[in-house]
Amino acid sequence: MIYKNLATLFLFACSFSNERINSQMLKEGDQMPDLTFQHVSNYSSQNLRLSDFKGKLVILDFWGHNCISCVEAFPEIDMLQKEFSKDIQIILVNPESREKTDLFFKKRVKVFKPNLPMISGDTLLSNMFPHQGVPFHVWIDRNGKILYQTDGVYANPGTITKVLNGEHNNIEKRVNTSYVQTFINEQYKPQLIYYSFLTRYDRRHRLEYSEGSDSNVLLSLQCSSPVGMFQAAFSALSDQKEDFVKPGRTLLLFKDTARYRSPENNEMFNRWLENTHYDYQLYWTMGTKEEGYRILLEDLARQFKLKGSIQKRKVKCLALVKTGNLESLRTKGGEVKRRFVRFGLRSEAQDSIRYLLNVPFKMFADRLGMLIEHYYAPFVNEVKMMENVDFRINGDILDTFEIGEIRKVLRSYNLDLVEKTEKLNVLVIEDIN
Image 1: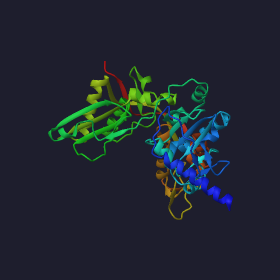
Image 2: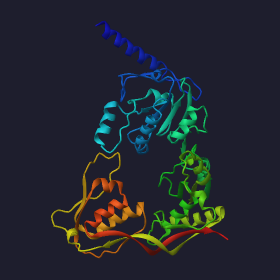
Image 3: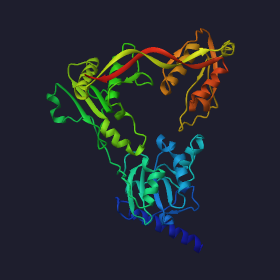
Image 4: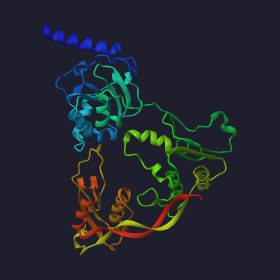
């Protein structure tokens, strides 16, 4: 009975201590309080105390059930913990309850569950370190001093090694963002007839226009490169509504193309965005959407000295071809069934086999082509088949969509994907001489 009362007193004291500092927002350079947490999984004790890791670099990794990039990073952070096990401790922090978090992993068999302490049902740490969006990381040094509040991209072997060696790397502080419908002062809105503006992308002030909230706003493009703006304009103006964002459908012939390639070093990504991406908005009380895209092209020409045109060009494509008799593909009849979808990591679905049963061959070819054009190259169907088909594929193969494995499945039906060169409409962007 005495031990039970002592345990209750201990938990009450921990709770009181945590609540007392609940309102304290901490900044870089502050000392981290020695907190104790009870709703912890993947830990050797029922309670986790931050002082348990004194002498180690601690990284608090804030995540959430709806964050796909957080989930995708789990294998990598697990490897980081193993690689630097003597020197660092990564702790996962999420707002959902422990029960919901346990259920999250149980229902999603494809999600890798890292072997890291996990604080669930958090409000305390989120109040101490207010942030917008996840992943969000807080780095605490060996002596409990807060080093960084930053993005997840810095959790990599190179940066961790530098910090452990006392080389304080140029880690950027996470900035909070304010969202606005326009950068034009609202008090002048009644007098406005026309405007267009182009501003540098700034993480602190984001243009987030809601489509349809003002019928006079013809265009509003957020965080877009000049290439992306050309693609948006020509896709919208295309008679066939072609999507020039897809692989192989845009050809860059201007001098400074390297500037618009995403950096290999993820730590440079935010800076790259700020140097190469822009916000654009066009307001016109008498204009149409089509006229708006043509004005956008004029603005791009003036500012960047670039022009775009649709040209027939030879493009490497993946063509669906027949390699033999298609009898095994012909439907056996029965009910029409469609379950030809890719499931992401957060999906609860666990279908081992996906299928299209008793559907027109064109539907099958179109579904396959959409996936190929999204991930690899333009798609061409060279198989002439009018009958309905039955097609089955392993769910894991469809989800990962590795082209070699897709071809193996197609070959079992006497189909294949082969590389061919076809003349297609291509968006060509070049310098204005």
